[in-house]
Structure formats: structure tokens, C-alpha cells
Amino acid sequence: MGILLGLAAWGCSASDSMAECSVGADCASGACQGGHCVAATGGGSGSGGAAGAAGAAGSSSGGAAGAAGMGGAAGTAGSGGSGGGGVCSPNHDGVIERAEVPLMAGLNAKFMVAVNATFATAGQAQGDGSSNWDLSGSLAGDHLALVELQALTGKWYESKFPGATYASQLSDSADLLGVFEITDKALLLRGVVSPSNGAGYTELTYNPPVTVLDFPISENKSTKSVCNVSGLAQGLPVNYTEQYDQLVDAHGLLKTPFGEFPVLRIAIKLTRTVGVLTTVVRSYAFASECFGTVATITSKDNEPNVEFTQASEIRRLAP
Image (cartoon, rainbow, N blue to C red; front, side, top):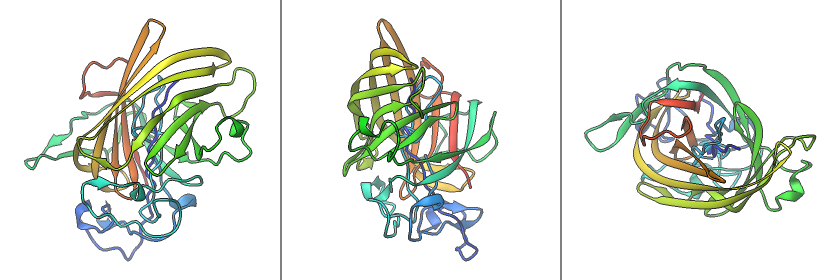
């Protein structure tokens, strides 16, 4: 089962009164859209939030991405980090604190999603040690997808995951949901479930949970999660191991259809072992202060190179 961990990027909407800019660094919010700064305003739930497992989303084979994957979420520049009130104003210090990534049920965001697309993950190296990545253009199979962070209240799996915060679809190609818990220090993946518990349903538990986001996020920080995955997959009992190795390996500027963001890049290597069969999936999540994950790139299965050009899925924040 796949898990593109989803850090979602919950963006804010633009307004006619915003100041002009050429790059994200020109703006207090850190995001430049169409020559104007994205405002950092109050509020932070509902459709005003725009999204992103390591973020957040999954691949068809189950990678982890951004968010430190997909399934995770990112907050709007207009949300408080612990859910709701207040204003998030990026301080551009190169560190993403828990309070700078609003995460809560009820947020949603639009992403442009491409499948089986070509993109060089290495980006363009800059003289100051940073990199630039341009995901603003069209890619193969592009289509819009709405990512929602759903409350567990009333869901068939609510009692299975006490203390969980929300559920979010992991992949655009499947309807499986990741079940997440937010703490003061991390975003955790607790399990994966089907939307309903009819015939052939899925109910997987991660023991211990996967650390999708490990706060504070800063360059060169590494995180490792080794989990036993057990339960039902399409109605069949399973028991296997997943290991997630994460490294915040780069910083720079990322262009998306929504706008340009200063980002930290999180490299994620998922190693899944089922019996004697091992599958490796690589992914990258691009995280920005007050927006969370604004893009993710997931490799095809068993990609041998750390930097690659052929992706199974690419998603980036869209207006």
C-alpha cells in the first residue's frame, strides 16, 4: 500500500491590494504570485487553506513524499500553527517551526498533479549554495486535484485510531486515506484505510507511527522511522516492514502554478520489505514557512539514483 506522506500546502488567496514583487523573498509572506505578494491574513480553515506525507499524497506504489510526503498538510499563510487563530508571518530564518505549519481537519487545497512526468529533481544550482526549481509550467497528464483534511468524526475507522487528528487521501490514483496525528513536535502517520469498510476494504496500522514531519525542520536534519505495517489490504491479511529515511538536503526557490516560494527540500527514501521482496521509492517534499508542503515529486519503483528525472507523480500548489 502506498503512502506518499502528505505535507499539504495550505495557501491563501490573492487580493488586488497586494504589493508588487518579482520573487518570494520580496514579500512578507514569502510567496509571490503573478507579480503580487500573497497576503498573510488571519483565519485558516475551510477552503481558504490550500494543501499538500510529505505531504501530501501518495504514489500508486506507495511512496512517501513530501512530507515528508503527501497526506500531510500545510497551512495557509493566514493560519495559526496550532490551528486556527492568529497570523503566520514567515521570518525567513531557514527553519520551519511547528507554529509555521498550520495543520487541522477542515483545510483543503488545490494541486496540479502530473503522472509519469519528466522533471530533473536536482534543479539549477546557484552560486550561493541554493537551488532553483521551476514547476510552474505544464507537465504530462496534468490535472487539478482537491486535497482535503477530513475530520474522523463519524467515520467507520474513528475508533480504530484514538487521538488521530485527520485523514487525507494519499494518492490521486487511489482512494486510500492516510490517518494522521498532530503533536507539538511532529506530524505522524498512524494508518491507512479505505473510505468505507465494505468487501475488500483496507485497514492498516503503523507501529510505531511514521514521523512525516519532524519539527523544527532545518537543513541537514535527518529523521528515520522503521515501522511494522499490519492489518488488511483489500481484504487480505498482511504484515510487512517499511523504513523511511528523511534528510532535509537543500534550500532555494521553487516556482509553482500558485506562485514562487522559498523552500527547504526534504528527501525521503521509503524501503518496503514484504517477505523477501524489497521495493524502494524516493520522493522529495518542498516545504515553505506558513504554507507547509507546496510541491512533491515521487519516483517510480526502485529508482537507483538520488536525483532522478522520471517521476511517477508530481504535484504542486495551484490557484
